[in-house]
Image (cartoon, rainbow, N blue to C red; front, side, top):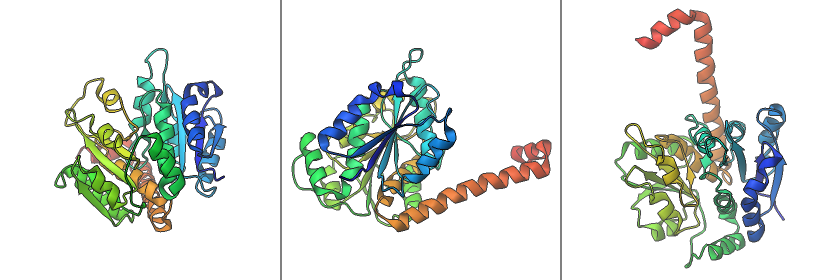
Length: 312
């Protein structure tokens, strides 16, 4: 049996907290490997293993962490396969610290985040990603989720749900094209049957304050991985992200990160496309080079001159 899913925790004390992820994967017959890899106590070992995932034919990594919750993000920074983060509940902040740490990733390094303690949703999402080219697994998954009707085989296509003229949608479409995903289309929220017929490998769903339930509503009607892309024009209430992730399974991006939503979708496509993986690798290298150029400029100019330039 192939082993398409890696599950990693920073401490073995987190294993019982995400047991539902293991149960879902076992129930569906999805092979997985569980590891204890700390982002803080064994950073080199954690990073080295993350760099091996793609070559070892893993399709997705699930990373669970609480508090500062750096494991999912650090894993994502070292691999081009999609990483699903499970925020573990904490005693002081009830997991909100974990959720915000995992979901609010900087542009260029996305983590698909589920709700606090929602290990079952993480397991389902991982199974959905692994099932894209496994008809038998996909059939078991659809049966478990009560989904009926035939579905087209997955191809290199990403569906976006929301207004085509929206700025976030345009940014996502541009980024998809940049990383080699040449086929994408925009659909209405109710057009899930059409999305399934299109053979989409991933669905990006925009969500604002009055449509936070939309990603979960789409996810309830399909086994295609759904990426929730929240948008907000200003400050949001403290329950904004928990309401977005109340139901699922959906993989949430940070607020106002449409390009990260596109990158996460491209990573799903890249599981079976060497060309897209090469584009993703080049994109990641460009991001690193940009940071290195800024650091070199700071060293050359000195802090005061550099600050003056930033203020202009």
